[in-house]
Length: 228
Image (tube, rainbow, N blue to C red; front, side, top):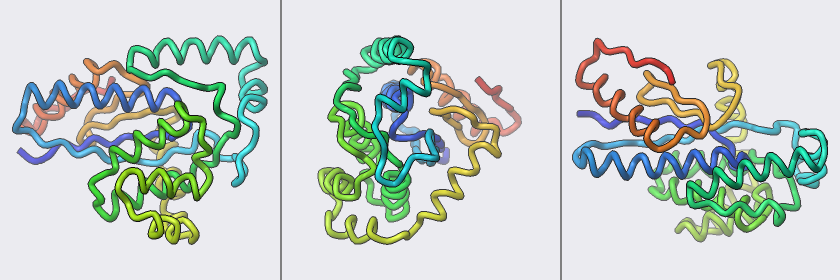
């Protein structure tokens, strides 16, 4: 059977996307135990949660308080996200985040990793989420991004040289613009073999079911799995 393709639309400054990524990891572990001979390929696609973010970023908490209606509302949201995060093994440290990051260069970095077939894309995506939500690092800063990539086994100088250019920037923007055209208005968003879609930080069991249905569809092309 050919590999099952999972397309994931997400943004590295979206806490629910971090949870969704961890849930996907758990689902993949269950899947490999269930069907060890099956191959799965995960492809990451860009989404700009805050497309108007300045290149240098802007103060994080004031923006969110304005967006969500004040400090009390923001505290409620952070509590809800933190509670959900603990079930995925994530201890969110929102208090460490000083700047709301423009994520174009982070998405370029993910795109580059996939394009060159570095083999460490999953590690890179995890590291970007961790840098943002566990360490409070500015994932819009080129030097920070180069450090993250280097820690994932990539050549730091090569990454710095790449980020110093606009290479792939238009392509990444074009990819991000596809999401609303597809009716995607929120992330994370998972697409299993271009047949089955799951929106939001679905639990591992739901994502595992998506894998099962995608696998069944590959062996029985007449099947048409429903969207969840």
